[in-house]
Image (cartoon, rainbow, N blue to C red; front, side, top):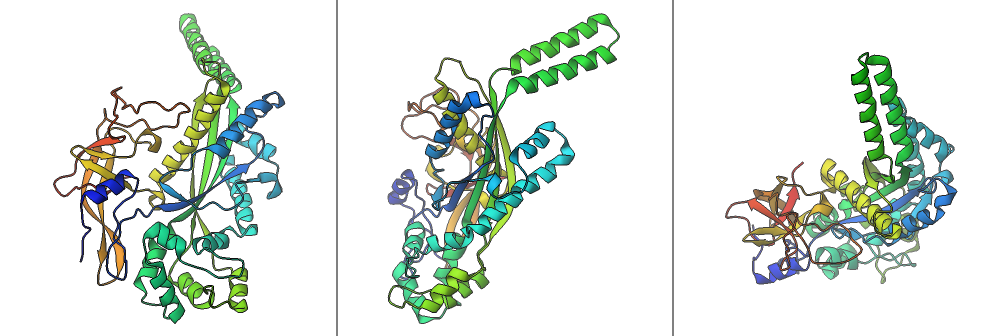
Length: 440
């Protein structure tokens, strides 16, 4: 078994957001590249994110912020042409009706509400043939139906020409590099459907206050204690009534890719520009073997206060982007398949380009992984070589801001040389270029 060549070049590449991986170049030589998972985010539009017509300007700001939000840097951009769709076009029930049930707070309605949204999402994904189109993008499919391996090469450092020669030979099984590319790249392709809205805090705060006051009046006999409870409810109301809360729900899907699907695709549908076959072209365009499997969903909520010395455009833009980042973090922590890997940039101290944007907190544990290539199987795998913890006072604040200034750590110190979070532990085996993956 060969292990990665660790040298200054790898560190330099890591500083450019790349990682050392073990891959086949000319069947033997490993090449350095970071194999990110691939992501296609879509917005599910239920109704304007601000309900009142008087807030139309705020709606425009939020939609612009969503459209222009930076793409998550830890994923490859696998977007198709559509960036959003309307719930009403794929459901027999109105978004308003569902929203009323959701706002009622009745827990028994939760599962039914989620199911209605999922039904609309599933219908959209099926009607738009998203899974097949995502596969087509992976293989750079042309109008004539031909494919090539250019994206596989770019994202995984595999030898594209050698792969195409092997595919042309028709000998699919036992082709380790192609199988490895499927496991490392294609299988780790995801769709995240975001549902977002802004809710005024005052009605919710008022309802909570009124219930608390009513309980105090009906259950507390002592007048002084009753007055104290009512005063507490009023204080809580005044603290919570201003501004909005942004609610975001993200539904996660994973592209299904296994040996059976791969064999059928390569044997029956694959063709390059030198071997155009109308029958193979038709088979791909009409196949139903490609699917997106539902993984789960997560919710995120955060407070948005307008009128605090900054323009509404800035406040809403930052709130929108940060809340999307927050729900991605929750998906990563909950579902192992969606977890990202981050390179170690240095070991004295251990620093990685990850921080508050990714939900890193003091004491969080990460496995240290080394990607190796097994000569016997021709496949890559991740070997755990140690573990590290986040240093509480050295967490990088890399959250989205409109004004770019000096990077700062949580303790206020400036960190101008290397932007990243510091870790402790690991042991002697930990080296620059290895990968960190958070432990659940």
